[in-house]
Image (cartoon, rainbow, N blue to C red):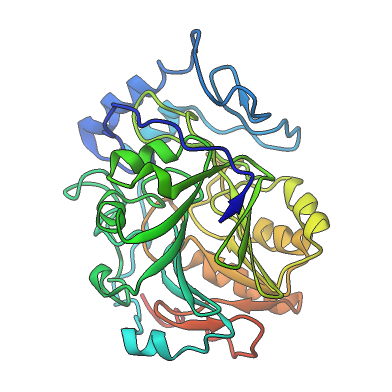
Amino acid sequence: MTTNAAPVTPASTSQPSHPGLRQWCGGLMVAACALLTSCASHGACETPYAASPQFRDCGFRNPPNPDALPSASQWKIWSRFIAGTKTDTVPTDPIPVHPITTAQLEALDPQANHVIRLGHSSHLLKLRGKFWLIDPVFSERASPFQWIGPKRFHQPPLALEQLPAIEGLILSHDHYDHLDIATIEYLAQRVNRYFVPLAVGARLVELGVPADRIAEFDWWQAGQHDGVQLTATPAQHFSGRTLNDRDKTLWASWVIQSGNQRIFYSGDSGYFKGFSQIGERFGGFDLAMIENGAYDAYWPAVHMTPEQSVQAFQDLRGKVLFSVHNSTFDLAFHTWHDPLDRIADLSESQKIELATPAIGEVLTVGQPRTNVRWWQGLK
């Protein structure tokens, strides 16, 4: 592998104790909210990441964005989760899942690039014959604990133990709906190479991943592995897994080039001008996997509405818009199908080629397909 990414740093000794998500309950949420509001100040710090343009005031920061709307206070957000009413945020009908077997995966054309939706933002890729993972979450809950936190709407289309040999694993950031403890612990020695934003490597080392298998990237840094070119690109988000580590690790979107095809993966991001910069630098994408879910007026700068997701896709100069970050976990107050309904209607009205594959469905990049609104009629 060749890369200009930064080396991984030693693991921290702290243990994760909070999901970094906005979904808790009762007294746990009240206590956590009180602690969160006390963690805003920063003292002196020592860091190996001081040279990063993204690192300021003892943490990673988004670039200035005068168009970004402010979020509500942590107290207001968490109080809403405690006392607010949710309607239709969890499906009562089963989500359709297309089980996929190892034999089916092996039969996929080794000269093409394929994306298999596992749920939420988790995807299995077959890139010219080798398998890769993006933000894999196989646990029942997106949480550090399997007795509390957002619970899956559906099972993955294949079990963790059924995964083929994984050449590379890409992480966008360290939130629990993207970096899952049990999944990484199982895969720790089973993945040849991990690609993560700055400071996320220590998270993986804590979970048993050998440090020499991890490559950390700052924004715009690139590397190559087994014929796949990877570039970490900007995103507008935040990070953290405990009550006192907000923004201690970087977040990123990713550009994946396999053969003559380019795939963009947004990770989590609010809308910002960085999408235009990425589109200009790379000249467009055969497939743009863009987040579309968990948005809310209380946190408008860190997740996109469907309208913003479509604008980001246009900024990126994408050919096919692939909707991710929905249909698996209840992470906000909109209905579970609202992201799908709105992005499908917007894409149809603007003549955008949309991909909303069912869980387990295989999308082959560059090949024609008929998109189906699989969620229609489900409660």
